[in-house]
Image 1 (cartoon, rainbow, N blue to C red):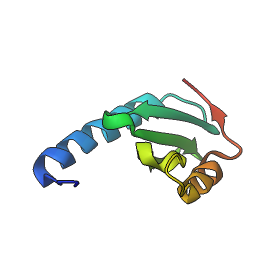
Image 2: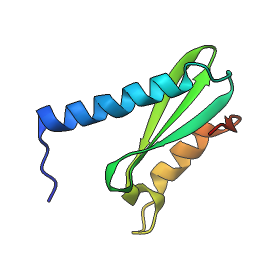
Image 3: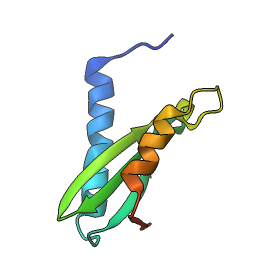
Image 4: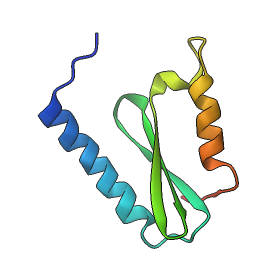
Amino acid sequence: MFIYNKTLDDTIFVTFINKALDEMQDKQNGTFSSIPMEMGSTLFVKKENNKITGFFMNSYDWGQYGDDSIKNEWKKFISGFEYNE
């Protein structure tokens, strides 16, 4: 069962969003990076035309339980971008 605590969860998520924005600010266009989050989740961020966008992957999204359809969307998101740690 998943319990959502709006105040706590929003605060934590905003913290990771701000970390991603700070990290990508000085990166070159055409690059992406990954921000490890809690419980095995990852926030992927990329910079294109000085615009930073993100893609959230839950630890269950990698297909180990059968459905890996979101993994294809993740591949599209990072396609053509160079990984930048």
